[in-house]
Image 1: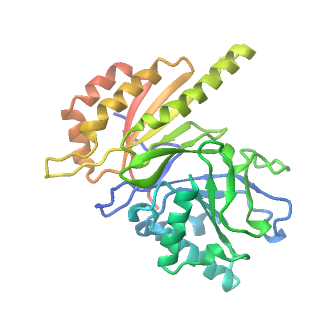
Image 2: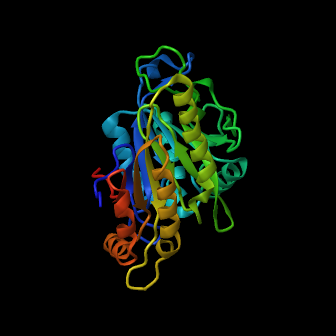
Length: 330
């Protein structure tokens, strides 16, 4: 089994809501800003992207911001359980405090997969006393992305300098591709609450399938197949042999010493079935399945072995590899 961490996504923590570290991911990417951005910020070319933010990981994010010098933070929200959203208000308050005391401004954008999730986040922040996102001249904002039309729109009116554009080319001089080129929310089931996973499709990196706390990963089938079919059509049309590297991050909660394994017994076969399907896709060059959001590392490894999961995956190697996410050293 490949135990090394993924190259693209790194983790602030990998635990579930009952662990002493919560499962939040991050990566850095180059960004461009709209033409009327303040001149003092126009030289910024890097952004910190997060998937969720727990209060347990707030200090780690502050250290990442200070060490890297970034001034933009974008948070892709999966749902508002405390281990996924409790740190968002604190980060907004911290960023607003810097702006108020004339320190280097840090802009915080939270991207939600639906209006419903955005309103749930608004309610959570309001209850906790965070209102920075609702001000006209704020450095914080809540954005909503339509999971069908992939259109991002602000939930609140913002100053023009808050608008963010993404480009994989740090030397480009145009606005670059819109933010929704990089991300695609996927509506999933997680109890009765509004919840999303994310597809992340950077130009210079693997296709990322991030399941979030979903009850099933079947919700990603249509979107992933559409992306693979698009690559196939391009290859046929232009006589190319373009292939895709994929990384699939799956929630696998484990409960040590209780004899209970919340998702491994139920979802491991489903994960395996989909790995086999993707294995036969001619455009998939490599597929890396990374298990995350677990309570106990040793218990997860033991259950992966005792359930026979690793034996069933081994015939798919070396094209398919299995890994377990581990927290980055911050």
